[in-house]
Amino acid sequence: MTPPAAAPIKKRTSWRAVKFAFITHALLPVGLLLLRLLVRTWRLDPAGAEELRRLLRENDRLLVLCWHGMFFALMPYAAIARALGREACVMTSPSRDGLVLDAAIQAIGLRVVKGSSKSRAVAGSLALVNEIESGHVGLLAVDGPRGPAAVPKPGFVRIGRASRARVVSIAVGCRWFIRFGSWDRLFLPLPFSRVSIRLREFSLTDGETDPEALALALRRLMVEDAKALHCPVAKGES
Image 1 (tube, rainbow, N blue to C red):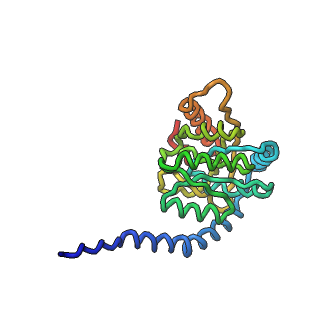
Image 2: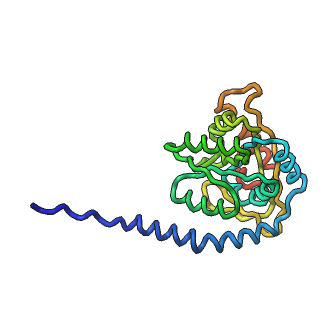
Image 3: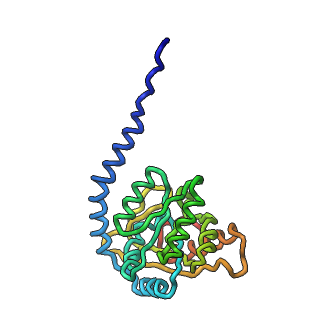
C-alpha cells in the first residue's frame, strides 16, 4: 500500500510569519520612537483640546466617532484623555495586518478590542460596549476596517445605544501633511504643524431612528467639519 503523500510545506505562511515578526520587533519600535518625537513638535488647537477635556470630565460614558485615516493625527489628543485618567479603546481587525496595528496602538497607550470581521462583529461590538460602560472612551473608526473612506457604517448606532454613551464626532486636520496611498487616505502632519480638532455631539435619540439614515447624517456632519479643518480624508467628498 502506497503511503500518503506528505503535506506540502506552507512556505507562504512561514514567510508571512517571519515578515510579521520583523515588522513588530524591529521596524515598529523604531517607527514608534520617530513618531513620538514628531508628535511632540505638533501645536495643538487650545480651544479643541479644552473642549475635549470638558467632555471627558462631564461624561462617564463617551463614544467618539472618527475616520480611519485620522489615526496618526489623533495621537496627541488621546494623550489628553490619558492625562485625565481615561483610556481610549479602539476596535481593530482580527487580520494579520490588524495585529500589526494592535501592536502600534498598544505601544502608544491605547486599549484594543477585536471584532471587525463579519464573524466577530457582534463579539467586538459587545467588547467595546463593555469597555465604555467601565469608563473607558470608545474610539470608533466608522469607515473601517476596509472602507470606503469617509463613509460611515451604521454599526456605530448599535454600539452607542447599547452603551448608553454620549456620542461625539471628531474631525482632525492640518494644512501641512504627508498623505499615504492607503484606502483610508491616512495622513501624517508634518513637523511643527498646527493640528486642530472639532467635536460635535451626535444624537441617536432625537427624531431619526433608522441606522442607515443616521449614518448618512453623520457623514454630512463629519465631511463638513473635516473640510473646515483641511483634513485630507475629506478631499473629494461632498
